[in-house]
Length: 303
Image 1: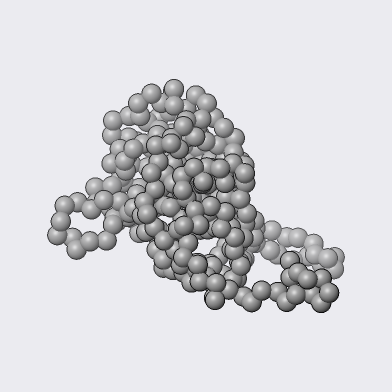
Image 2: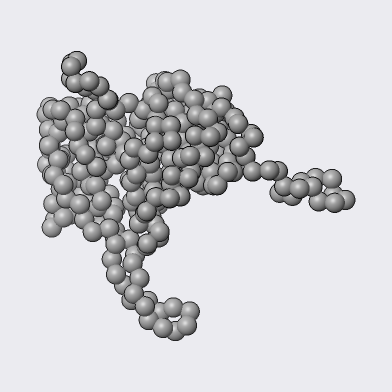
């Protein structure tokens, strides 16, 4: 990951080992060595005040913290942050803001434990912001969707070597921009949010200072289920289309419909279901796998 935004916050680069070797006994009664994902606490301090402890792999902790602050709506702009310093010896991330965070006590008074793996938490005001979100117009073709699924399938991942992690990615069409894994999908999406803030929109470099990367023409992908938390965070990042290898919760569905967000789930190989925002999906059914043959005498296709 390259942090290229001019005048952005100063970040350390405290990447931690992602896997750990352990000895196990297999089904034959033999010992073998396998890799398991690392998991470590990271306590976030904002202007010397303890805010939250995140459980993480530690792949990109500075971006995780930046994205967490963004997705919790505690900071409005990347320019609000002066620096983020991570020290794994004390498992802490020190955030220094330029002007403090207004009404921090009030805004963090209520916490909601989420369904995120690794047990995430969001501050209660997050749901209140949904009505103020307006997503840009965007379209995704069925062919591009298949390209996204295939790009993830071919990606070399910690999951393939050690399992037990979630992966999230940001695409522009079929182009993979960034891929992140962590013990919880909420951490992975926060890291991507931080990455977007630290990378500028493409330009020729001759105009005014470039803005952070927008979500207008982007697609968010996750291996985990689409909960309300994931839908809201995607929308806050300005990303109007989300794709999941898994399914969707009732509350996630309700929020996606309210926002007009295109939510696609069960996306594997050439199969998928579009839960909401189907107007954003340009269907090309001729690209799909042939429908299952009708069972003789039953009059209906196999499920």
